[in-house]
Amino acid sequence: MDKPRDEDPARASTVRQIFPAGASAVRRRRPRALAAGAVIAALALAAAAGTPGVGPLITVPAWLTGAALVLMVAFPAARPGAIAGGAAAGSLAATLVYRGPADNRTAGWWLAETAVAVVLLHLVVRRAGTRPAAIAGAASAAAVTALPLRLTLHVVPPAGPRGVLFGCLLCGLGAAAAAGTGLYLRFLDARRSRSVAEARRAQRLDLARDLHDFVAHEVGGMIVQAQAAQIGGDTAEALRRIEAAGARAMASLDRTVHMLHADGPRDGPHGLDELPALVDRFSESGGARVRLTMDAGAPPPEVSATAYRLVVEALTNVRRHAPGATAVDVTVTATGPALRVAVTDDGRPGRTVPLRERRRSGLGLPGIAGRVEALGGDFGAGPAGDRGWRVTALIPLRSPP
Image (cartoon, rainbow, N blue to C red; front, side, top):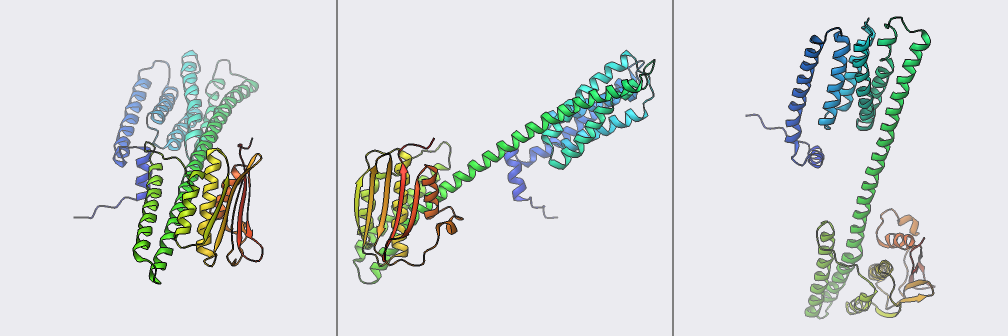
């Protein structure tokens, strides 16, 4: 027995997003589309045979253009470029070989085909891929522009060159309007898709920052406790603190996972009210002693959350990059219309890496800098004299205009 062919996971995922029923729904719709097209074609032939005084070169292209419109509207997943291109090719061929007559009955069929072809042109320009839209759109526009030739060249008495040119120009303007509106709506659709993609990317970056800012901080504390136990510290106390840090890390992970669910509970963000407990845990974990000075009042939630994240990241960097630090000063004060946050340690600074060189990741201090700047504030990080490192931010207490 032949092994069934594996389906491309990326394609299957895309199909499932478009059709919740899965790829089988697409396969089921294709035979229906073909059947619908066959039925409409049969009706077109029957109408051509049963329309007295009007030849098939008038009725069949009109019916086929209508069938193309029905297929495009009823089956959006079908290929709009191929459908519209086929209808346009049939219409152009009929125009080239048509030799009359051009009376009132013919004009009615002509008017119906022209109206449907204009709508078809609009839809194919808006929905088809870039290359199919260009090819099928050009063919449809040419077909619409040439449609008046069926009447102006064979009416009795024949229309003069100006009349022929005027008819083609009028229909060409209609085709241009249909294509223009299709292009405009296509641009709006593309901009909307880009906005959705950018919003999703921003959400993913926000979740990544949550993991980096909070989970990495707790994991760093667990590493310090484990190292202290290895060199002869109180093992039981170290294990207790490792357990507590692991529980806080798991809570941060749970909060991040809940944010992925639209209907899940959403915990409030961390804020300055949690800062005393944070610095106490840092001091107890065997790191440098932290002196906290806080006179911040009640800043807006987004300012409070950003200030808290800055202190978390600064303390994490002290533990990671300045293990010799013995003291850290954390100052959070409201100075007029802004909140000033400063974290200064007395460790020996290592190699200074310009912040602009580290912005590519969007995490850590670059991510904090982006948050501060988004609130209209100023951010800085660099050596604090001969020893130590200082991270500062000045965040407006009101949102920027």
